[in-house]
Length: 273
Image (cartoon, one colour):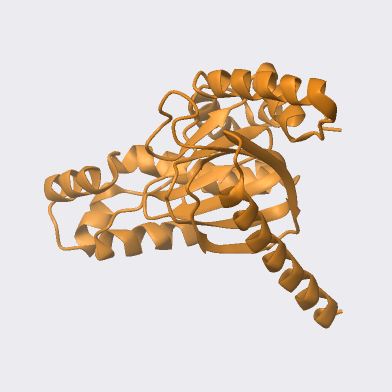
């Protein structure tokens, strides 16, 4: 069984390289393809000359780059700028639909990664974009779909599912440690003490490195940790208590403030079939 699994991973890696070659060889302004990956699969560091708009139709993606880490839960999308080297990890079995956008094909997109909520229109367009098209009428229809998709992508609302990591090694080590054992009870003074810094100096340094206060970073990191577990079917109560919240209500309040909906409502998405 282990041998078959290794063969499967090898085949997926080969397929990924073939996809990258096809993306670079494509002549159309927007090149759209679907792809599926098993839980635990890791896509090695790579980049493409086109920006990528990727819709997580099922499963959770973890995308990492020098800019930080981004989590893309089901029914969300991620914008990856052209030329940005990144890796991808699959948290659960993943189905993704991607549109690769050539430079100059549309108004300038974001210069940094962005996680976005999908509108019904954007979801329908990306699904149609990857569907096979036949004949001249199909090509004309495809061009219209792609043009409207490009317009809609630029209107999608941001979601705070990016997690910037500091470049400073000591701060980054604290952040990695927190991700391994997250807690709602993180205290600024504790981290400042560990780095032999005053509270004020630490606060300034952390904001300078990440663009966020430690409190805001902690909340985003907590959501980052909670989402794959919730998407995997764990109860809100178990996740909230594991993360150190005094009550489910306190966790739900934080989650709603960050993502605009309570955990159960957040994952109540349309059937992708």
